[in-house]
Image (cartoon, rainbow, N blue to C red; front, side, top):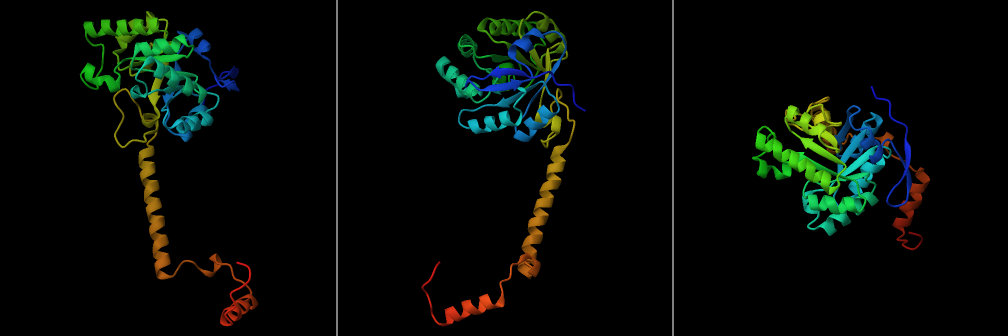
Length: 292
């Protein structure tokens, strides 16, 4: 069952192309506080296409300048859904590099970029007109600073630090923030005190957007999702069964070739006997000239 998608709006991308989107940054900011939207991180064109067909409001994808074709393929698979390209922290080593990476992502079809590493990078991108999403709470690649993969915000000091991080993102010019594994009652207070569009990954229902990874929703990983995730299907087992069928098919093919069961006459093309006789005669007489 799918939701009713909003009317598509015409937009002009950074390359000057006319396209249609379900939401713009303006829409999402204006609709802050009016109910939760739905976002997923997708990793394959098939997942992105399915997310758009299911009328998800927003999609995140991973972005790397080394393989822009991967992001372009996902963008093409979900051409009308608001899409944020998530930049890895090692993509840029300066504000200038971050800005160049952001421009490249926008040229590849991003509606927004995600940066979890430096408020200075966010400020540089936002000053250039690039919509930037930040991140507070558990930032997995910064987890050494928070004691590993654990909730952030359970103590007064952590809660105050989260508030400071939120205000730093506002001051840097971000338009949205992913809030990961923050105690829901702490998040409820933070969400009331920010102009940013808040995106919950395990941080409760007081945010403007709920976010999950496609691998958790679809169950494509062998391990179960973290506590804040939920499986709606178990594609891992389905993929294992499919792989078993692939192996069985290859094995049957090899067996039939080796025991002479394949190919059979119905798999072959046969020329007239006169054609064979002409060829045999030519070879017997040692004729070597003629067309190849």
